Image (cartoon, rainbow, N blue to C red; front, side):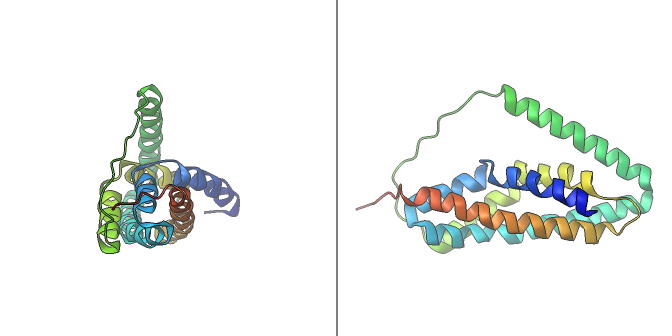
Length: 177
C-alpha cells in the first residue's frame, strides 16, 4: 500500500470506525450501565476478534493472489458491488428508535464477552474486512504485509472509537437500586 493510498484509507477508516454500529452502541450502553472506564476496557474485548478476522483475510487474499492478479480484480469488483448494495440497503431502510431498559450492572467480563460475541457476527466488520480492505491491496506486493498494515491502522482507530462511545455514554449513567 502506498502512502497516498494510506492517506485515503485512514479517513475512510475513521468514518467507518466511528459510524454507529452494534459494537459502538454496545460501548455506549455499557458506559451507561458501568461507567466509561469499564466500557472502554470491555470494548477491548472486540479487538482479538478483529485481529482473527484480519489474519483470515490476509491468508485468503494471499491464496487468491497466488491464483493470479485477475482473481484479485474480481474480488475488488465483487467487494465494490457489495459496498454499493449495502449502502443502498442502508439508505432505503427505515429509521428505528432504540429504547433502553434499566438493568443490573454487568460484570466487566460479561461486557467483554458480549463485545467479542457481537464483533464476531457484526456485518459491518465483515463487510469492512472482506469488501473494503481488498480495494487497497496492491497486486505484486505481499498481501499479508499490506493487510497487517491496514489492520493495525484499523485497530488503533477502533480503540479511539471505543473510547469516544464510552465517554459519550458516561454522562448518561443509569443507577440501579
